[in-house]
Image 1: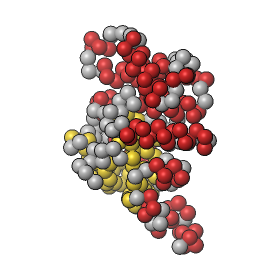
Image 2: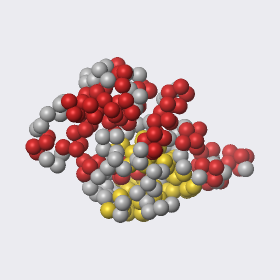
Image 3: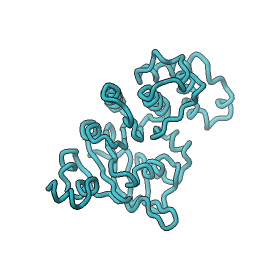
Image 4: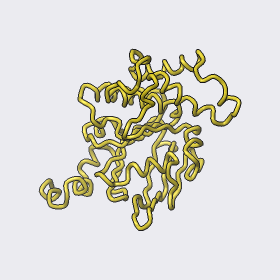
Length: 255
C-alpha cells in the first residue's frame, strides 16, 4: 500500500474497567475501500468515535496524512476532510432533503464568524446541495421533508450530508443496514463512485455479502482486539474469524 491516508497505532479506549478497544493498528490508503467488521460489541463504532473525535483515546495515536489528529474536537477533524454517517439516521425531519444538505455544508463556516452569519441559503449553496443530492441519487426528493423519506433514501441522504466534510475520508457506519437487495445495489454503486472521485471509504458492515464484495481489504475486530486483516478471500478462511462469528465448537465443525 502507498503512504497511508489514515493510520491508527496502538489505539486503545477504556471506560472504567471495560476495555472497548485495545492496541488496534491498521491503515487505509488513498482511494481504498476498507471494511471494519466483527461481531456485536467488537469495538467497531468506538473506533469510529475515536477517528471522528467523538471520543478521545486512552492510548495510541491517529494520523491523517501524517498529522496527528487524536484528541481534536469533531468539528476540527471534519474540517480536515473526514465525514461520517451514523448507524441510526436522524435527519432534521421537518427540513427538506435539500435543506438537510445545506445545513451540513455549514461545517465549512465554523472558522469564520463573518461566514457563520452570512446567508446559508443563497443560490450557490443551494446549487452545491442539489449536486450532492444528485450524486446520491436523490435529486427528485430534494423538496420533500426528510421525515417522510423511506429508509433507503435516508441512508443516501446521510451520505450526501457527510460528503460536505468528506473531502478525503468517508466513514460509513452500517449504511446498508435494514435495506432490501434492490436498495443495496445502487448504494454499492454510490460508494464506488465516491471512491472513484478520490475519497477513501472506511465502512462498518454486518452484511457479509456487501463487505466481501465491496471492500478492497477487511479488518476484523473481536472483543476490542484486531484478529485479522487482509483481502476478503483470505479473511473469510481465517480460523480466528470463523471462531469469532460462529463460536469455537461451530468453527471446529466448519474446519
